Length: 141
Image 1: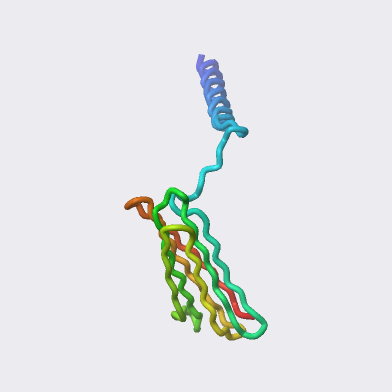
Image 2 (image 1 turned 45 degrees about the horizontal axis):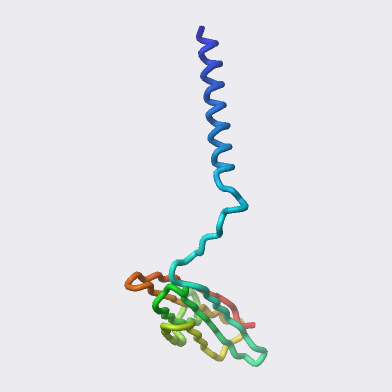
């Protein structure tokens, strides 16, 4: 009797496990599944740091709002690493109600020194704010 009960219990648990796994696997129809946007108010962000052979660096950022957002603002800040710490070099900010915010910082770079750029973007839809921070860390060649 105990052996039969164990076998029946094992079969029921195995079936429950298989049903649970198959439901989660096939719950979403791949052909109709839509890709959801990462942000509600922020549309697109690009952020990069480049260096020239002449010992100059440049950090650029573009932040675009979603069409439903009312405004977008961004701050681009550059830091230079000395020892174990990053020290402020420069910062620039901007905001727009139409279109995108484009920011840029030109700076002289020292070969072998690491620079960090931090981009803070906030987009508003009405009074709801959505913020995101981006970092780029590169060493001057």
